[in-house]
Amino acid sequence: MSYVIENTVWPDWEITQEKRALLSLFFELADLKSSEAGPRMAAEIFTSDAVLAGGRGKISGTEGNDLHENQNGGYMTVLIYETIAITQSRKNAWDHIDKRRHVLSRVYTLDKKATDLILVGELKATTKSGKDFRQEFCARAVVAEDAAAGKPRLSLYQVWADPTPMQEALKL
Image 1 (cartoon, one colour):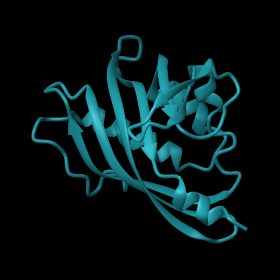
Image 2 (cartoon, helix red, strand yellow):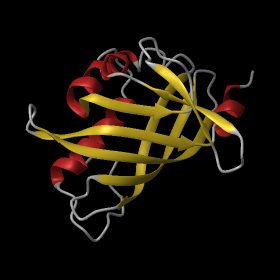
Image 3 (cartoon, helix red, strand yellow):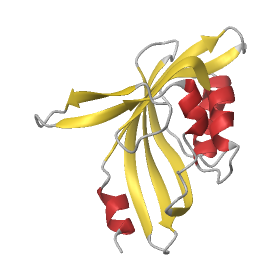
């Protein structure tokens, strides 16, 4: 069993081994310091029309940015990426980070088919300057059956995280 889901608390409704493996592989690839991580995400994790949304950085090939009002009345930028951009998404992921490790602590599902999931987890990382930090995150993952692949794929991955721990660790 992968370190990503080794101690995960799963919902009472069954989440298939294929879906668990998909989530595990996604985070393993996010933690992989290799030029193959992005292309593998696009090929093995996401549907061809997938949306990857987050609040950081800009990736070449991005269709555009949407402003979404947050609960405090302010706005945050949510980037919408095309699959081609997902291929390129890991290019700068290691610019300031030496190592990283994602762990899922809990998974919730909206439906009995486990196609709409909420993930709660933690990122443990070390900067290139040797500073360690931990960052909790929450994400929504929508799983679709990819007819071409014959396996589940993510059609949406949207993540929320407080950037403060990373920002503090990256201060010179």
